[in-house]
Length: 401
Ligand SMILES: *Cc1c(COP(=O)(O)O)cnc(C)c1O
Image (cartoon, rainbow, N blue to C red; front, side):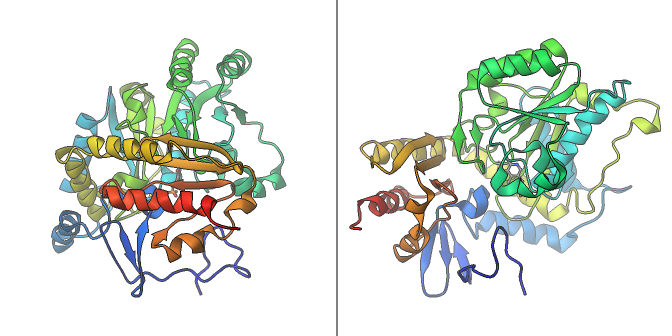
């Protein structure tokens, strides 16, 4: 039997079974549902995209996978080249892996070893944000700060290797003053903290973080697994503030195949590049650089560029702001909108109980969690479909109780 994610299996409601999917629609065979979650924020082009399907089919006819240990191939070379030219600054060195969590692990290992290679073994600490989420593997849980996901770590007690601060400049300055000689990196979900509750903060915090990282010689890591590829209304937040290491996942393959990449700047790469074999990065996921994943990622980026996805995302934000402008309810704490993300935070999680079924009956797939009712729609969504998703959210609060 299947053990489902984040579920108490004993009390879990039966999941809806999907038999087909096309565009923004999931199809149960009886009902078509707009996917307002984009399958955990990844399916940016919608389902069954003819060009993405074709990219996979064409590559599968050659080969689906060969390992990167001692071998290489055109799709992975082209994707690395594309990322090198497409990403800002000197983020030129792509280390591929099979999931976002692993890619963050790789980034943290890079930061730690970068200093070890220089003989600074005391730099074992990570500066991270309150409410951050970086994945479900152990080091990413430790770097993260979300009791709801990470409570098993209680068994180990507080980590001496991670400091969590709020997104406030004073806290940032204080943390650097106090810990700068033990930190190897600062790790953040830039501008938008996703799984921790769709929390949004100002770019000035990141600019200050960049300055402090430079002043103290600490690596800045952006976990853009969720925010990358336009979700915040920026192509990458890295376009605004340049990190030393950038992590991409989720939408990298248009949501087709699990794949992720840890992209290092020249400075980080050069921290490993010498004649000493012990200075090599000892990591190598079996499926890194999978040829199907790289082929579909290349096609996804091509479509993103050619069809001006940034304009589509601006339109989504405009429509969302317009539709939510006059919305208010005493049970709502805050409505937050940024790019292709909208979140209605309620005061009491019980307010959202039953919403998923309510939305289902109206033809929308939604998955609120805790106090957060949100939408992160595929970018190809039509105006009337987006209006329907938002209308469903508003209707929930307007209904008779
Ligand atoms: C989803 C997510 C991850 C983990 O990615 P997986 O592919 O699920 O391992 C890491 N960081 C952020 C910011 C995420 O949203």
